[in-house]
Image (cartoon, rainbow, N blue to C red; front, side, top):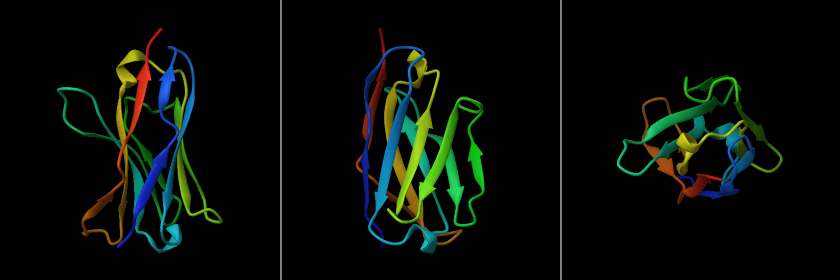
Length: 117
């Protein structure tokens, strides 16, 4: 079992940047994969970015080229860097962790990102 605590959301103007943090209660190198989903009002939860225990990353087309998922093993924390933010990036962002390839997702509490002028 793993507990996840997110931080870093907020209000940002279009074109701005944010860094979201997800701190895990265990070593992130013992986790099969971690990443971020987001959910906008009235929409389904969307996978944004993932990073595996090996460090392999994947991104949704909607954020590819203007986002990066990184990690700090010393802090057991995964980060989502969002750049060139658009109003359509407005959503609650959820960190997840999965211990095994076919295991269940563990979730953070979510952090609100609002992109508006």
